[in-house]
Length: 311
Image (cartoon, rainbow, N blue to C red; front, side, top):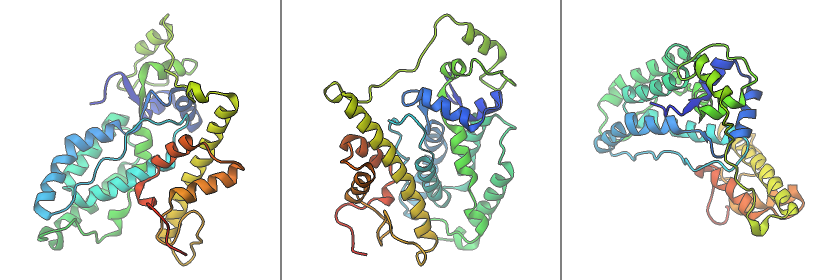
C-alpha cells in the first residue's frame, strides 16, 4: 500500500472538496521534492503487471514495456499533458501485452489507494473497458494465437480516457505538508489516512514544516538576469512541449488536414527544431540546461535523433 507519510490528490479532493486551482496551488508549494506522480503506478507495475508481462513475453515472443521515467520534476507546476501522454502510451501497451485479470487488479489497486473503496468517479467507464478487454481475450483469434500481442477488435477496448483522470488523482504528495498547506480550509469529511484528529494535531503542531527548496541556478550562474532567463526558457519550452503533444494528436487523427509546425513528415521533431522555435519566441538563445530539462521530459516517440527528413 501507499507509504503512510503520503496522501493522494484524490483523497485530498474528497476530504477538503478542493478545486483544480487549489490543487495547482499545492503543487506550486510542494514541487519538486514532495510530489510523486507515478508512485502508485510503479507499485502496480512491479506487483501486479510485471510477472504477467514476463509470462506473455515467453509465451508470445513480445517485448516487455518499460515503466515510464520517474525522475524528479524540476518544474514548480504540474506538467499535465506530458504525464498524461506518458501514462496513456504505457497503458496502451499494457492492455495488449499483459493478462487482462492482472491489468485489472493493478488498476483496482491504484483506484483503492487513490480514492478508497467506493469513491471512484469513473466506475462505469472502467467496467465497460474491462468487460470489452475480457471479451477480446476470449475471442478465438486471441485465445489460439501463437505469437504477438492481443489483437483489438472492439471500439470499447480503446475507450480508456478515464486513465488520465485516474493518473492526476493518484499523484501522491507529502501528507503533513499538504495538511499544513490547507490549514485554513475546513476538513469536510474523513478519508482513509486523514482524520479530524490528525488534522488538528498537525495544524497545532509547534514545528512548522516547509518543503525543501532547490536553488534555480548554481552559484556560478546565479545572477538575477540569468535566473530570469532560466524561468523564461522553462515557460516557453513547456508551452512547446504541450503544443507538440497537441500537434501529434492532430497528425495521428488526420494527416490530410495536419499542417506541419513543430513536427515533420515522420510525426517527430528534434532538438534543433525545438531550440530554434524556443529562440524565436524568446528573442534570444534559450538557457541550454533549462531547455534540456524540458526536452528530456518529452516522450521518446515524439523525438528524432539526427537530421529530419525533408517535408
